[in-house]
Length: 252
Image 1 (cartoon, rainbow, N blue to C red):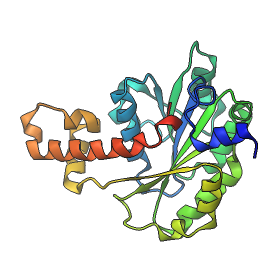
Image 2 (tube, rainbow, N blue to C red):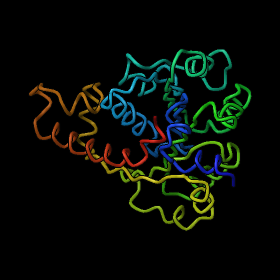
Image 3 (tube, rainbow, N blue to C red):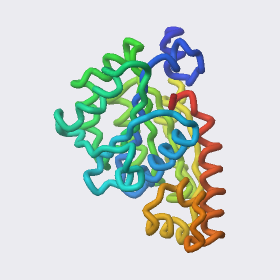
């Protein structure tokens, strides 16, 4: 592999290979129920906490949770429709200066994702070094989750960065992934792995009822939300941020 290709895929913080280009961050996970949208919401909180300007797009439809919890930054899009999804790459590639877009993909959107990135020119721009694409792939514990990850890697190739997320809120072990050839192949091209902790279920439900972002709930002064639950959320979010910091170079 060439030096340039290695820099693209290892998360090297060389400004000439990462920080001078627009970036497309895609939260993905073909299997529903793996916590993909939870990770997208945490990423939005993380970028906001770092004062990183970005725009978010929710491909889960008009009732998507990223749209619900991050209204001011988020628009609804349909990956399968060229006119609907066009604003994402238009924003990233046509604007002045370096821009970041966060897209929360719908479950089972793999083929539509491949078509959009290919036909919209994103894969070509990534290969030319003009665009950073980061797939944040949220694993489930089942075999089919690893199969879907393999399909994603085969479809998008080496010019895309991969962050593999083990969500401890949905599975305690990821033995199928850990022992897979897919993991070996991804690590060989510089994929990064992180684990995010579980948030207590009752606290998660309280955040949901509040319709606040995780960060908004954690830092709220509203006593009706409960001191302990707010602190649980704050601690959990701090631990999530610590994990994300390990792959910060692939999100900027």
